[in-house]
Image 1 (tube, rainbow, N blue to C red):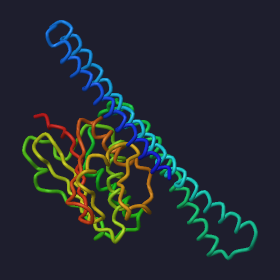
Image 2: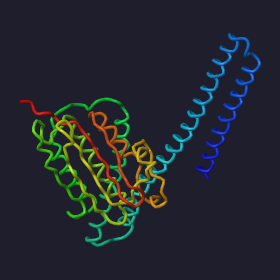
Image 3: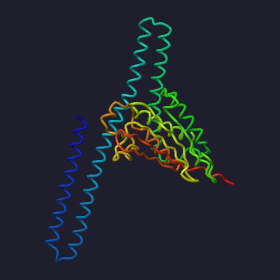
Image 4: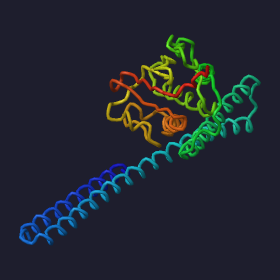
Length: 308
């Protein structure tokens, strides 16, 4: 119901803006007809009406954006609330069970493992929110040091396999021969290793999350030229409609497909990736042939040029 009311508000604002612009145009035309022989009045009148029309158009755009932003904020709050409430309720249930009745040692250990997994989920959600806040600050990386990006990517892949219980065939990695281009620095980049690790991990987690019918992800590390590295994470999951390929990197934004309504998340992962890429002088973009046809997300970063 809340989404419907917001859509009605957007339609009302747009309709009102169009009507006001139409009224301003009508007044402008009337002014021209009445004072077409008086050049000075005609000139200043036209300028005034153009300013009014521009102001109305900008005000309408601003109001629509604010309504959509509030909608995204509400979606984010609902998602974060769910991500926090669910593991807390689970941990509480296990603790109540351990408190109220005797359980065997094997079941007790199982409860401990499940509670640890829930606490990791809680910690991950909190870290995502904190990283999103830090990423929103438009500053460069805290310290620019040489980072062996290929080793960092391997570490993130191994961590993703453990975290999501994946087999080696589910998440494949390869380095293309172009990494050995003469004059480059191999797979070395300048930047903050922790932030880069966060960006790569978010790309991998996102690919796993949106592969509900079976995970098969390929990761490629390539060199576009002597000055640029490209990390491509390709999945065979739900895919993304063309008109949403750029929007998925906005803060709090989530793809609006019915098939994705059960996918958990806060809508912050790709926003964090984009922010980190920009801080390091790179960029990130997505490619997809449409719903159900998988997605490829490419992270491009400047290479550290080897000094002779």
